Every structure is written in structure tokens, then in C-alpha cells.
Image 1 (cartoon, rainbow, N blue to C red):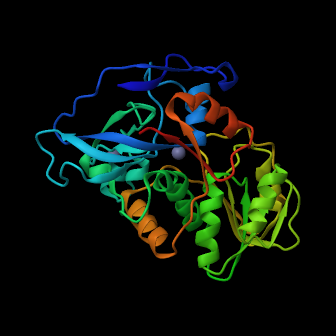
Image 2: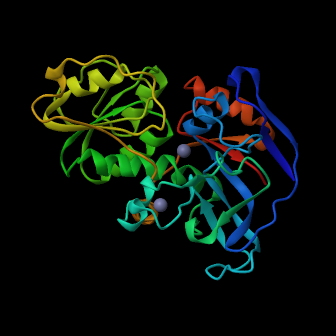
Amino acid sequence: MKACLLRSPARVETNPLEFTDAADPVPQGDQVRVRVAACGVCRTDLHVVEGELPPRKLPVIPGHQVVGRIERMGANVSRFRIGDRVGIPWLNRTDGVCVYCREGKENLCDNPTFTGYTVDGGYAEYTLAPEGFVYPIPEALTEQHAAPLLCAGIIGFRSLRLSGIEEGGKLGLYGFGAAASLAIQVARHWNVSVYAMTRDARHQKLALEMGAVWAGGTVEEPPEKLDAAVVFAPAGEIVPAALKALKKGGTVALGGIHMSPIPALDYNLLYQERVLRSVANNTRQDGADFLRLAAEIPIHTAIELFPLRDANRALNALKNDAIRGAAVLQVE
Ligand SMILES: [Zn+2]
Ligand SMILES: [Zn+2]
């Protein structure tokens, strides 16, 4: 098969992914083999490729927002049939037995594997995943439009949940890439007023077009105090600004897997029972709940398509805030 291989992490400006031939993966046990139709490009892929996440497998095929059809199965697969369309997310597998898994917090599992990081992912013509961790994808969605829902969408949804934002509230979104452009649609569906803080003027414009009541620069102070905020941009200097924008008792949820150092905070920014918390991965329940809601709203995904062989170009565009909505690799 054709695949984009990362042999060693490097800045994306050096085009570190190699478009090359790789062995077709063979499904074992509970694994399904998916013929990839589309794979979303996530900021986490950028962190994997540039080595901000320490390498766990090299070479590795990145990509964890995979949509395609099952075309081969391990001997123990019972949930699906050949030809079923599924989505493969970041959380590839958990151990099912650690204290977190037993408490229903599988997103915090002690022994997880991650698609496109600790096991090969979807920047390829074929990939594998355990049947228990993939999602059926409704036929109403195209593969290209469904792909960004699998991480940007689900993580954005979990971030909204953990921010505690309630119907009719005021929400800040920091950074306006793929996750925020999906989260704003859920927020608007909940009748929440959205304030978008992002460095790129094109993204500010997009936020306003998508129903934000106000848009400004990354650390600009919104005109109203916020009930909650979600930070998607991986820049630690946003944290004090987001806390400063909050009402007493409000929450800032950090949606990214990696962030540059957070500067020293004046305690007054946190005092009055403000909460600062991170968001780590998601449970399968988050995924199922979000995909149901996405179909109900229905959520529209703005996408920019790139051929598989141009994955480096897609990552460079993502790094430069040049994507309107979500970047998606078209594989078929
Ligand atoms: Zn576990
Ligand atoms: Zn992701």
C-alpha cells in the first residue's frame, strides 16, 4: 500500500513525511482492516510529526480521524461485516482493567494505545483498529465530512462538557481551527453566546460567519465576562487571558494534548473559585453522544481536501492557520 511514513520527527517545514510503499497490515483477533477513504489532519498530528509528543513508535504512520470501509477482519470480529463504513479515532484501545477503565474513565486509561502515534494510523491506504473502538458512520455523511468529527468534533464536544457551559451561557473559544469550528455549532445549538479569540484575521471572520457574537485577538479581552472558556490553541500565554475573561466560579478547559509553558499566574486570576482543567482523550460514550448530536443538529464541516501524497503540505497549512475549517486527506 501507499502510506506517509514518519521516520524521525522534524519541523514540518522540512517535509518529514515520506510518501512511500509500505506492507499491507494484516488484521488479527478483534481487528478490522479498513480501506481508508479519508483521514482528517489534526493538530495532534503536528505534535507527533514535530516531536512535541515524544516518539513512541518509529517509523510511524500518523492520522487518527480515519473513515473507510471494512474489507478484511480478524477471526474474532463479530460486530461488523465486510463493507461496513466505520470511523477510527485517536483512542485506539484501552486495557479495560485498570482503575480508570473500571470507573468508566477509559479516556484516562493507564495502558492505552493511540492511533497514528503508538500504532500506525490513517495516512495510508489501509489501517487496522480493534472492532470495539471504532464508530459506525451514518451513510448521510460523506467520508471527507465525517473524518474531522472523529477527533476535532469529539474532543471539542468533551471540552464543552468539561467547561460546564450551560444553555444560554457565554462561552469563550480560544483558537478557531477545526475543533472550534465544530464546537461553535454545538454551542449555538445550546443557545450559547460565543466569543472567539484567535490570532488570525481569517479565523476571526470565520467565527463571526458561524455565529460568534464577537471575535478578537488571542489575548484580547472580550466585552462581557464569560461563564466558561475552551482553549484549543496550544499557546500557554492564553491561559492567564482566559482566566481574566471569566466570571467568578467559571471554568477554563484546555482542549489540546500539548501546550507551550503557562506563564506564572497571579493568584487573583484563579481565586473566586475559578477552575482550570485539561481535557484528555475521550470515552467511547463521548464519541457516540457527539456523533448522534452531530447528525441531529446537523453539524456542517468546512473542509479543505489534500491528496494523501500532500500530507506535508496539509500539515504546513495547518501550522500557518491557513485552513478554513478542517484539513482532510483524500485517500481513495
Ligand atoms: Zn485502562
Ligand atoms: Zn486529534
